[in-house]
Amino acid sequence: MTLHALPRTAPSPAHRLRALLGWIANLREQSRQRAALLSLSERELRDIGITRYDAVTEARRPLWR
Image (cartoon, rainbow, N blue to C red; front, side):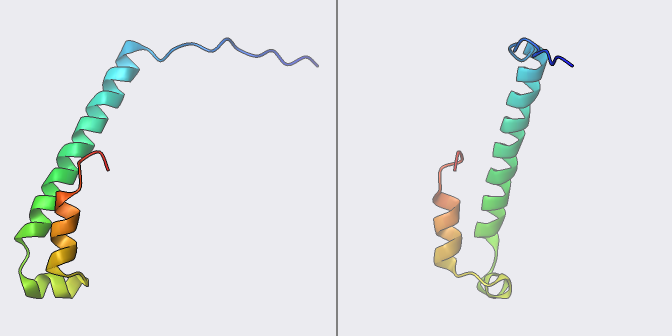
């Protein structure tokens, strides 16, 4: 039995566009979540186990991280 390797091809433009749109959607969601984190009260932050410092530190991180 002989195995034949298929030639490696570049992703289609449609695949690349879907990947780019997915990445942008993730960035927007991350931005929304960080803004929501900043809007929490001290009590709400305590409920989820983080400090105001933790929330601000997370919100200030660059979006690509």
